[in-house]
Length: 390
Image 1: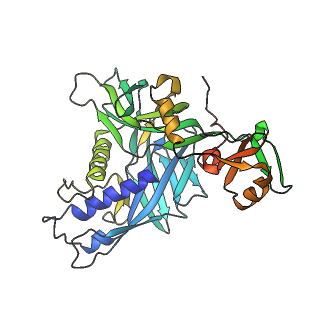
Image 2: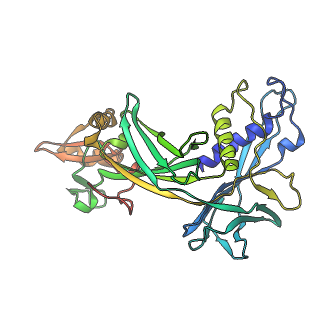
Image 3: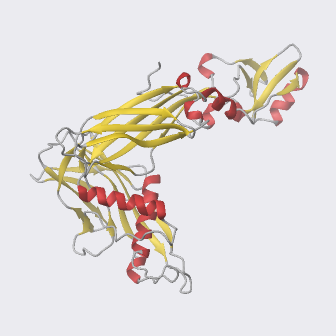
């Protein structure tokens, strides 16, 4: 949804401001205030499904004397029906989703020598994309990384010997294992008002977190003698980030596109980076390849592509990064322990339930706040299904 929000902001910035001659006195026309259907997603020909996010971006009318663009309400589209259609008449329908605005179309691997389009039906209105050819990405040559003063820079290299790709986009999914600054080996049982040793199944110091890319990462070899992209940076893990405190994984997804799609995404990227700067460039109107059936002027934005995605996953261990131990120390900079005399522990735990027990000596119990020893506040105990240890 983060990517969709960025798309909506960029799109509205273009649609609302593109026609303004004087950046200090924009004039808002009625068409600028119509809800805009924004479609995010692509046809994944390798299957087993394709996913889409749909939302209406509705600008709120700005006061007549205001020089600011309207604010925006982002409303997920519910009860829509989506269908992927092949030129031979084969169609695959969307399934209902528990997440508003999210839709999944299940399908087998699709023929790469066919053409496909996306049909969207919302409350009796139909939106239809153009038929598009399949663009199959070449294999990723390398996903690599290097340490810099700013952190760890992750880059991708690729090439197409057939010189048929030229336009590339990357997305990625991250996962990392982390531990809390302190380890709790005791449990306070409030029901029985007793203290016992924490079992192995109850350990809460090691968890996993996952995240996905939010930006638009593009590159092109157009104009070069070879279809090669070399060490293109796609992600920076900031110095002292806890992502590299223990073990980190990134899955990079690469897809190629037509020049039309590249221009679309490049325009979105440029405007999302410059949005809010009235002195920045105001690109031409963004449309994409989807239109309302019956009213082609009705505002809808999206670029439907049929792609064969290539993927590559790498892992980075803390031993490979010079500042990983410092990152771990920084995570616990605000954590400290308290010593509670043993006769006082029951009253203390009853009235301070945000504290957890660490360990004990003959005279005292050591306690700390839950955030310093319970990784479940930030992540999940279960490792992702793909996770591999060194």
